[in-house]
Image (cartoon, rainbow, N blue to C red; front, side, top):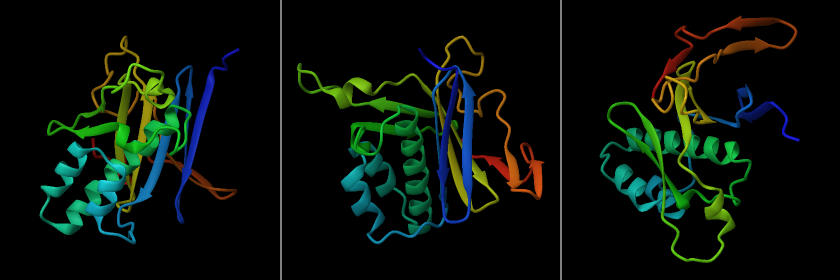
Length: 188
């Protein structure tokens, strides 16, 4: 029996996000925009990303801008594998590409399978997903991934899914709807 309620949670050292949907899988991730890495960004990209994503990052001359684009890609990839219900090792990041198109759309491209045999990792990957990327409080990126409903007029356009509401909650203190405010800026 499939349950209608789907949810996903992510956190950083200073923020927790939770996504809840009805009748559609969801993945959510949040990362600090200035997240520091132990290794060079391109070294990490070569280890985890696809060749097209590495090329995309390598063409960015400014190290700060390159780092922010890396974090965006990483956050979107995390949201996708979480929406699939698989962990990092269950759907390796180098098996699919996230494309940040100039028009603001976010697309996914799954590399063709190289063998005719069964590949459980590859078999779970698909391109029928809708993404949104938002900046929270000018300090974090939040990525949302939901299964694309082709009957929706907003399907696959990179906008926030219909009905999405963002709340700032301090337990036992306050709940404030921050959707549509400066606290939540749509990136793609």
